Amino acid sequence: MKKNFFKLLTAVVLSSAIFVACNNDEKKTTEETTTPVEEPKMETPKDVVDIAIGSTDHTTLVSAVTAAGLVETLKGAGPFTIFAPTNAAFAALPAGTVESLLTPEKKADLTSILTYHVVAGNVMAADLTDGQKVKTLQGAELTVSIKDGKVMINGANVTAADLKGSNGVIHVIDAVLMPGK
Image 1: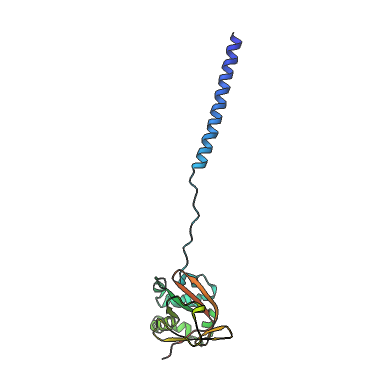
Image 2: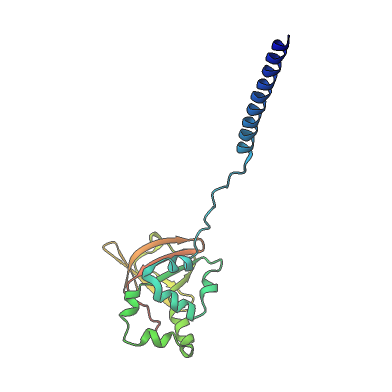
């Protein structure tokens, strides 16, 4: 009888141990499945300023926009179309021009030049026609010319078109546009 009682007690202890072990595994599985899964982060679309900032070929333009105090404006709702000169375009200006324009005393001139590169609205390359005039934020007009599929703005070649941002579009150009006096 003692032997049977011991076997029974052993069976109960083992059964309890197995039950508890299975129950713990089940609990872990439940906890694992209810652990909050981190949702993928949605990347906010870049505005036209962020696109320029992300380009190693537009560091001079970004410096100029910053010096002119136009960052906040160009990060606004827009839409804006920007004809963005490359670093090489700025480097082609006469020696000392860029450095001079970046001084506080020349802020008005710099602002005039930069706003001459900006048109209100989303002007996509396909919307441009030969001979078209587009009014800039500076107040003057730019002339579009298209020859053999090549688009030019006031004689500057468009080297990359339709870089879309959340508040406009950028067309990269190979020259700095200077407003007439």
